[in-house]
Image 1 (cartoon, rainbow, N blue to C red):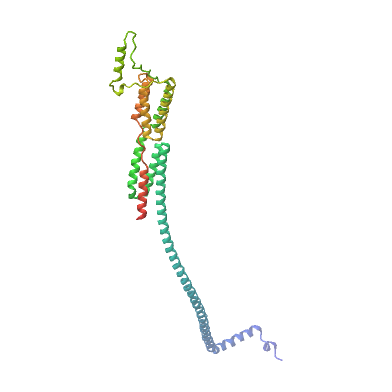
Image 2: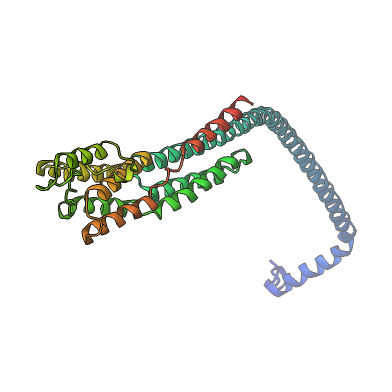
Length: 338
């Protein structure tokens, strides 16, 4: 049996041996390891390139599929868009036709509105002229009649039609006549006539004139009386010397009442614009006052002066507004016929 130190080497000796064996074998295995490592690197590179290429192909096919899908979607969207565009074109065409119809209708409506406004202005002018005439004829209200004429002129001014210029001139003439008529103070004059009629009882009646029969003298003979009677049969005298008729007491009462009625008649005629009746009644009352009443008395003198003043400031003829209305009708008829 070998000694222990020869058969079992110590641990440090084993390690040293291994290191020496490895160092001896390393130079022999170094070229083979490098070749294997190079081949592995090449194969790895090829595998990487192959995998990359396969990935590229797979991605390309997938992208192509996606592109085809997107292209199909685009084509479908394009078709839908074209269909929508055609629908919109039809709707736009319909809207244009509707717009044209609306524009034509609006123009026609504007024409109708213009004609309606024109007709309304003319009708309003005619109504105002009728109102002015009625206020003047039935109420003797010259102020309101003049205001109605002014409003009618404003309506024609808004119309702006030169064909109605003669109507406006006639309205202006009527307004001027109404101003002059309003300044007459007819109501005041009528009131004074009524007051004069109330003072008739205070007027003094002239005394009766003596008869023209010759006074009888007791000492005159038959021949003297015969001669006086014969001269009295034939006498030339003027009509101014004709004596007024003898009035009995009851006749004086009726004289006053007739004079009062004559004055009231003149008052009513003045208020109604009846110039002929007013002048006739006033002149008749003036004649009765000079014939039967004492005009030298203060009351009789004042009454005669009042009648003379009434005749001087007599009511003029009412302005003729009917001519303006007739002229308006003529112009409207002429325009309607043209």
